[in-house]
Amino acid sequence: MKRPKFLLFLIMILPWFTLPFLGGKAIKRFLPAAIFISIVSKVIDIIAKKRKWWKYYTTIHPLLKGSMPLVLGPFFASALWSLKNTYGKFASYIMSNLLLHVAFATIGMSILKRLRITSLDKMNRVQLVFVLLFRALVLYGFQFMKESIEKRRSNQIPPRN
Image 1 (tube, one colour):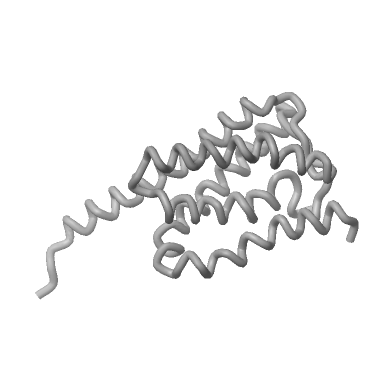
Image 2: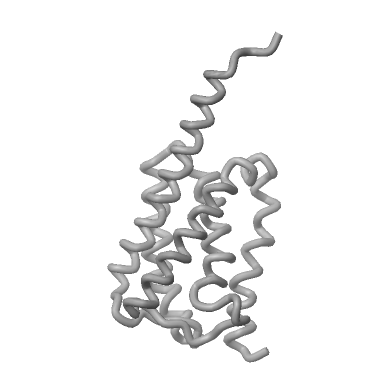
């Protein structure tokens, strides 16, 4: 396995080792939102490929093309962690996501470009931050709607005798 492929593989796998520290209750609570945002991220990647927003130089496997290693690795895990740590505190959620997204768009993308994994093409870093913040808002909105529906359902079910 070539160096960029190996590094991309590590980028995809290593975040999964943090998930046991989330706790089963948090994983069960936030997993649907993380899965949903992974699907949204794949749709964004399809749009990005068509509009040439970014390009990927390295793939691990033909089934894991484009942003899939990032979506299945750090994006998935960070969705779970950010919801666990900041859900219910919207200002904290937005601020922490803004900081993480700015760091990824500047430092992270520079590292990924140097490693010949990916780079921005017809999109600049500020635009990337806005795309990532859009994803963060969709993630929070999905979780909010999910919990609102669950709360409404639990209030409608009569107690068992």
